[in-house]
Length: 245
Image (tube, rainbow, N blue to C red; front, side, top):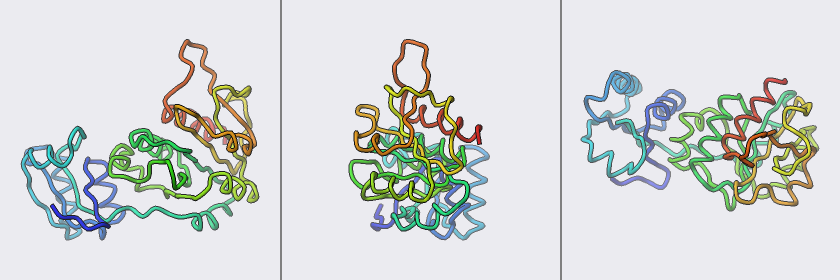
């Protein structure tokens, strides 16, 4: 299968449904495995409604192209979702109510995808990642996000500290996470314009990033486990923030 540099294969019922629903013009072909149930038929009908080519494939096609992924018997060829650059922040940070998620140097696509899924569920305005040493919008990220990557902007910035400075100058309160923090996440009063920064699981946030944060917080865990998966931490903290607001 020959794809252009601007195209990719995306699999899974939810991501495929969101992409066709949100930007049908970017989809050229839908592949489906026969006898996979009513939801696949609904996707076929949705694709045909938007004049998207629908092609039946056998199980070997999906095994070959989506090794060890839960493809659910459906996939599409589509144009890659565009990542936004720092200029996108200019208008976004003028909002009166704002919630941003910043992922610093998280390289595991499964973690990034799960973080985006939680962010989309919490109504986050955008996810921000650094250009280097971070996972971007890959097909795996979009699959794991279960359609979330189609719902919120994904912004790639050159420098996290410089981005924090820009956010703070616009009145955004920045909350960093650290297992050694003295404040618990449910004991903090969050601002109407807030940004949550999650660091990599092995190293956490960089020292310079921590120094720039307005507050450093952690989850109170009375059990014997000292830390949580980055995506689990993201979900817990984001929903604490929106419930308080």
